[in-house]
Image 1 (cartoon, rainbow over the protein chains, first blue to last red):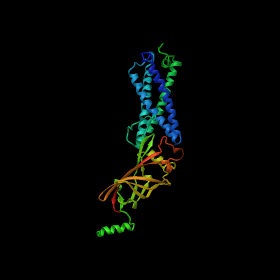
Image 2 (image 1 turned 30 degrees about the horizontal axis):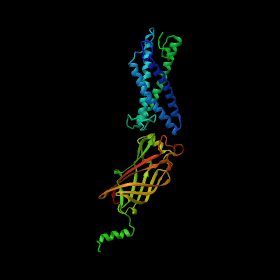
Image 3 (image 1 turned 45 degrees about the horizontal axis):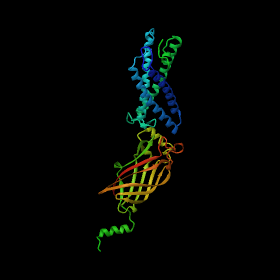
Image 4 (image 1 turned 90 degrees about the horizontal axis):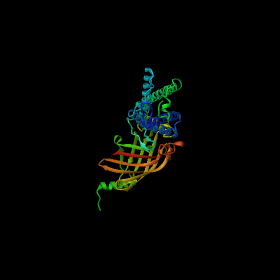
Length: 184
Length: 185
């Protein structure tokens, strides 16, 4: 099934979940490698890849959120206590805030630092702020804060999924896996 | 044929090889800009501080001399990150080469109101022969010389070593100038 139901994730939602997850992991590694690389053409090109991937992720995440609103979200297990439901919603909201905030803050850094960018060497990215050294420095801290927040939220997300699978024995994890259209 | 006295005086001055008119740069109405590239995207900048000394008679360009001094460290690309990069020894090496200059004693006309100044451009201690084309338009005591030329930055060792590659920072840099001059020193 392409679309979600009240009890299962459709193929589009699964593809976007795992595809974006893989790209986010690659993006975090790419960002760390680029920051640590000594100043050289290679470092600049690593950043061009990082920035380009960030813009791609921004578009994908926007599409994913639209798809989420246009589809039912599969219900949590009926016996989930209230705190679990609130924690699930809060951590998912936090993931989305980070997934949007990271590329947007990166875009602001790039604009405020007055560095041109051709996304994947294909098209120019417009600046969204005027050159502003102080703003660039502030946004670098925001970017760093968001990446730490994202890593914490990801850890909670993965831990919760594993807890559901191995301890609570629910289908929360397996229903997001490819090829498992129906919920038991 | 009887010539008026001042014409005679002028001819005598020329015959003696006297200097052509002296022109002084109006700093506030003059700009020295450049356009480098990043990923093929234009990355413009400006040298805030430079001086032009010109001796030039548009009717007798061969007598002219052009001297331009540029304070390299006054470069402004609207980005402190880029400024820090340009300071480095691989780029402009501010510490050792804070100034660049152009010296020409070969100015000739190529078309009505269009001239070329051949001379020596020194950047980062590297001397290269370049030809600077410019358009000349004078009204009364004021004149504007404007032109542009493209330089390969690697000729001057700007972006040396591993930076001497067009990716992502292009090799060609377009230099544009518009200098307003007033007659007299």
